[in-house]
Image 1: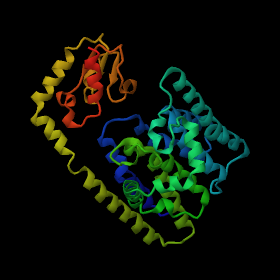
Image 2: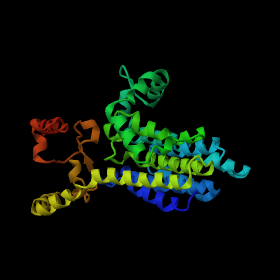
Image 3: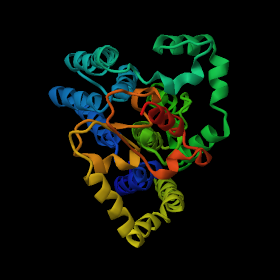
Image 4: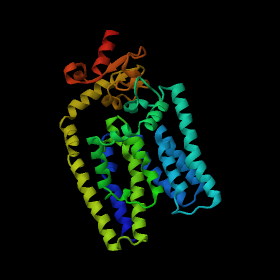
Length: 349
């Protein structure tokens, strides 16, 4: 591969729109996915046993659905013929990338069912029919209704998402002769495209970090193949990747050029926001608080703190002492989904 590819791909990683625009919403645990996926990939091709195990465990610890990324890598390395591994390392590979994530996910589901509200299968309600519920029903419907599932991929928003993701990488991820490489694209479908939760296929949110990192690896593998098989001349290949950097930078700028507005908005209204914080500071820290998401950082001193959008299926929780929300959230005309929940708490006194 041409030496210029190293700085070009480094630049491409940083200007790929999803990698930056996703961070514009808020800091999220998903931001740990890119480095951990890259470290795990590098650890495997270097045949590092214990370090690969460590990276896999750290990747799984990010969240319960992170097992998808580990298994995608495991399936790729199981069926690929690009990298050669010793027999001893192959055993480690199967344990680390296939057995471990399945055990982890199973234990995670059991823990959530026993000590929490279960897995967040509600984000896949579009795959459930006739009052069905549960992960197994989703799997059943995907298998028995493949045309319906495929039809879901061709909505305008999903098609726009796919185009931006692939265009920013010059469509390199799908220029593959080695079929095993396509295992790396599976999380894009499972995590981002099959769900009915609109933010999963919105590059402004954090749900794309893991999937796009795997697509980035696919682009890297594609360029490696194009170079080794001399399908494209080196100077043409360099020019193509350089153009990807330029196109990605342009798309990124179109999404981020107005980010300074938020900074100026705060600076111009600092007294207003300081006033809100002064009120939040007066709430006793021993109280059990239900709050609007934007107020939860300011209420972090309260040990028992819940987000009104997610807590208790938006029904009244008798443990709550104080409900803290913006005034406009109480008015029906503003269209907040939490308004109905607030009315229930008012009725409950």
